[in-house]
Image 1 (cartoon, one colour):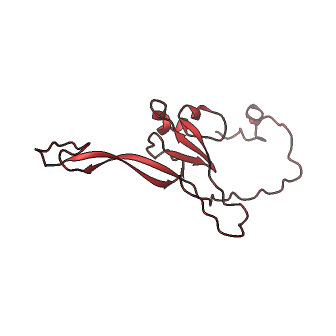
Image 2: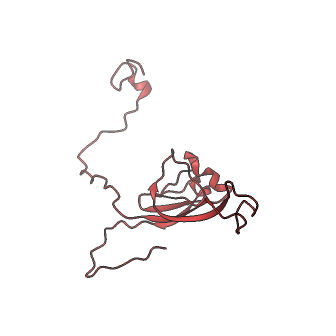
Length: 154
């Protein structure tokens, strides 16, 4: 952080230790490849919908008619995206790191899914307190089949 502390400068020996020299060369590695697979999961959430007063689960009895609602469970197939510290995760949400999938645990551990310190990783760390390993996404690198095949969604 100041002049004189560069490796060959007057005070360089106070900040640097010579450990050897680089010799030869290393072959370049391949550039990272963007994930091009297909990865989806079934996300279910509770939503309010209008209902007929007095019907099962409706918030209104037969004598009321304004703003009658009931809570229903709605499920949709959604893409599995990479973990993002800016996303607000809920219990059961699924994210991926590379092709490895992780599912946010239920209460109370799932409260940590929004804490970046608990973000899922490929190595062992505290992430397992908030996330479960949830399988692997297809990387679409398999050989083509002779005839088309159909994979049923869960």
